[in-house]
Image (cartoon, rainbow over all chains, first blue to last red; front, side):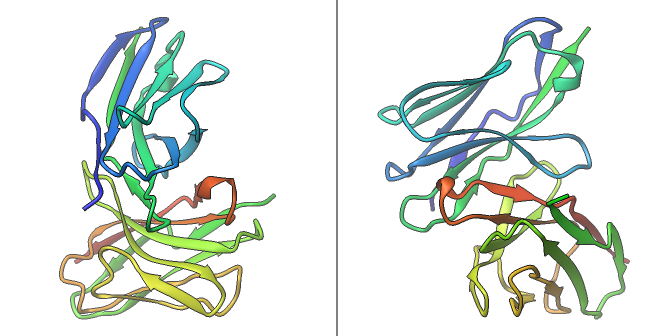
Length: 111
Length: 113
């Protein structure tokens, strides 16, 4: 069974700090990796996609991928209370063309 | 505006009833998906369809059925055979390229009374 693991949290950070969210995956054949943000009671919203090793930046968000270590992370700079949500890591399973989701990390940004 | 719509937003079902959840998209996406989310858990794939008139079972298809007669529509029926249907149901769609980026509708919250 292909797996995606995330720390459930909550991860609590002060406003203006950097939030670091981590994800590990078991399928070495995976090629596509995604971060979704999900507010309580709402559906997931795609915020970052990353396909190659290294960093990808988009505004306050940076996704980092290390395929050798099977590790994906999401950094949120200058965290705001509006960033408080659950962040879901998703990995496209190499052999099955299906997204496998982690259970999510709950982030709480306090003023 | 392009997007994915799901209806109804809330649905209540009595034991033994079949109910159908609607999912429509005007993004011209080929692939569509149904997921189920339980509290504190990740999304689990129920069914998916890569093209019209074709669909495959996901990881938890038992007690569910789907159809894909039009590119825009992918309804999900929750049958009485589904023993624990209370959950948040999410429909998504994607293009076959761009690494299978999936975009979600607003969801339907189903409660069994």
